[in-house]
Length: 261
Figure 1 (cartoon, rainbow, N blue to C red):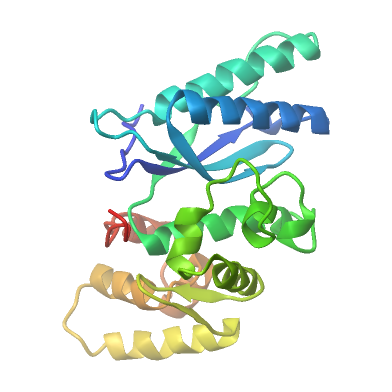
Figure 2 (cartoon, one colour):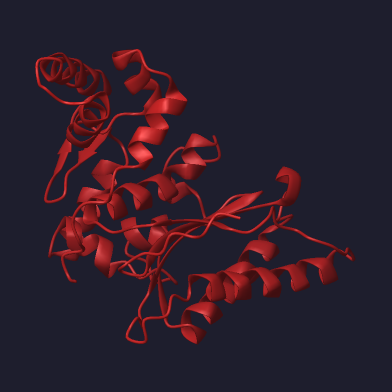
């Protein structure tokens, strides 16, 4: 199997899905139980929970290892603890045996402020995209209320809010605004523009790039870096297939480091 990519900063977006897309939560008690297990893992393995979202058949976690002095990467240990402990609870409660999760968990290393903001935003908007809530704060089983309402929960909100503004109240207002708009997330600033205007900007830039002596891969990466649009929109603008575009973008190394590293 493919070797897991490790983060230099110990920060990851982890995803766990139910086996054969089955539900891994059958009621709110199941979700609250996993939340307690996650809190135990946070203390036991010295990690920060930057964001989480529990959907019926999968979960999203944004975790950061806080003890990296030993040079060890604990993401696999953390996720194993979560999986083993929760499956034991689930199987006992519902009198079942066997696996619950689909293969091993997926993880994506996060190395920059821009990437972290984009991932946290994606995680908090997950229930809205699935039609389970009108607004992120309407969904009970995510970090949205910790971030946007200032409630105290399991989420360590300081790092993400610190990227937006030094004043936590101002940072929360900014995060609320970003949840309602299409955004371009730069390494040092955030710019909000309408979706159609973003597409037009990408079209103009693509035309300009045709005049430059760059490889097609370099042009794609530059376009995606300057105006981060969806793969579907990128395919419409460039005329290239989505699979090829995804491979090109995936090869692009993460840029920048966290501000407090």
